[in-house]
Amino acid sequence: MNPSLIVLLVIIPAAAGLICVPLINRLNTCRLVGVVGFALNLGLALSLLGACSQGDTSAIVTQLGGWSAPYGIALVFDALSGLMVAAASLVALACLIHASGSLPDPVERRYFHPLVNFMMAGVNLSFLTGDLFNLFVAFEIMLMASYGLLVLGRGKAQLAQAYKYVLLNLVASAIFVIAAGMVYGLLGTLNLADMARITTELAARDALPAGFTAVGVLLLFVFTLKAGVFPLWFWLPDTYPTCPIAITALFGGVLTKVGGYAVARIFPLVFLVGDAAAVLQQIILIGAVLTMAVGVFGALAYRTLRRSLAMFIIVGVGYALFGVAVGEPGAIGGSVFYMAQSMIVMAAAFLACGLIETHLTSDDLSDGGGLLKTHPWLGVLFLIGLLSIAGLPPTSGFYGKFAIIRDALGAGFTWTALIAIGVGALSILAVLRIWCESFWGPDPVVQPRDAEARAAALAREPSASGYAALVLLIAAALCIGILPQRVVGIANAAGQQVTDPGAYIAAVMGPDARPPAAESHHDTPAPAPAHGHDAAHDTGHDATHAPQTHTPAAPHPPAPEAQTDPTPDPHQDLPVAQPAPDPVPDVGPVPTPEPEPEPEPAPSAPRTGPEFRVQAHGQQMAAAPHDPAMERRP
Image (cartoon, rainbow, N blue to C red; front, top):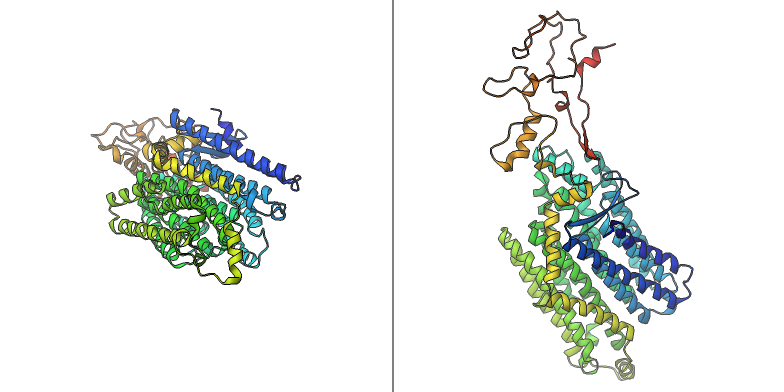
């Protein structure tokens, strides 16, 4: 398959948004453009996923403008990014269908359709980009569009929460660009594959730069703020429920998963190495456990449907980060599976909430009860979505949680795994309470003056587009739950790719690129180690601490110092006594008195001094070492 097709996943929604701008008053045309665009995106993402899973390559990469990595912009479509793009496109398609019947026409005319398409262009670019700076650019595209969507409707509570949302994301964006600059200062690159190559080599030599862990903490702060991780979760249950329900479903299903994706992609690939791994892994683990606990207790405590569902978004983010903290391929694969299906079921639950509100006139659970008698199919669809959120088998939410907890127990995370199991049990209790109070409970006590309005709301004709969108998402969730093998295989491949970056590095940097820890240095030959696992470490150690002598030990073969070196002696221009003519190479240099004795640099000059490697077009460049003789020459 042509790698350039990846670009269409970003171009299609961006072009659809541009088309909708001059046609904003023609709502039917805008709806058609959006639905066709997201359907094309979904089909293209599924076909590319099939090509990745069936072909010889695990990733499809395109280098924009023909500039090869790490200098150009790389878009990478693999199991992780492809699954996220496919799920996000499905959710966007369903939300757009639902909005055509639930949003008032004046709200749609306030650039709803262009903003949704622009936001999804930023979301897809976030999933596909292969470098840190363009991830920042994609975040800003996504956030700018979300700011506009957040204020559609112009309610007082909506505008009040929009200020909080905008302010927090501006702070996060500022920290993001600062942290990206610090990463470039430390590693000399922002390409994720090149970053993984360099950090793997430096970690093998125990030479990670100072401040590396601190930069990782800064980026973790940015991504967890956008994902709604404890203690940075406080904005989410107040902000999302204030929007129109179609926008709430889109935000709740997609936006928080972008932050979770960034953690799952970048940290196992780049930052969970060496001494930084222990610190960052503990931070992620503690944040994940507290996020799960806070989310489920909030879902039990809230008495409104929208806020209770918003707390389940936070629970899902906690489970996803828990798998990343465990660090095993199966656990990260479980996190990927859980995030993909959580997009679908959370959006479905919010869309069902919108239909419930049309029949109850509010989302207050105390006003529910008895809805199952008049709208049984809505009750069945809502129950399937809620049980999938809780992870009750055989729904789609079960498989991801099972993989995470299984690998956590196997890796020794016993107590945190037990907490995750307890959170799952409380989640089942919370969703059953929500469903029973909405559908199965007794009819609420209604004042006589409100009885007629309630009866009219219950008898209201259901929205055809609303039910169509809900059925689309629930059907997808049922397919994943009943036939999970294909999605589980893709998620496991994503876990393998993230924890073993060799294939990712080779796909982005070229077939000759390998993880630095697995390759020997080209500058200085070193004796082969006894064990394969220590090869990279021993090679790096020997290259850095080579003995500064011209005479190799007798039992060993001739060292590189004894071979012919075209590099002139750095001391040949100094005023020293002339040595004996034509010395024998194996005897060593003849001692000569020097006016100012200085430690003589090793003849293998490229291996002394600080060294930085940048691999481009199959070549390796090293910084020139410090030459003390250059300071003495006129």
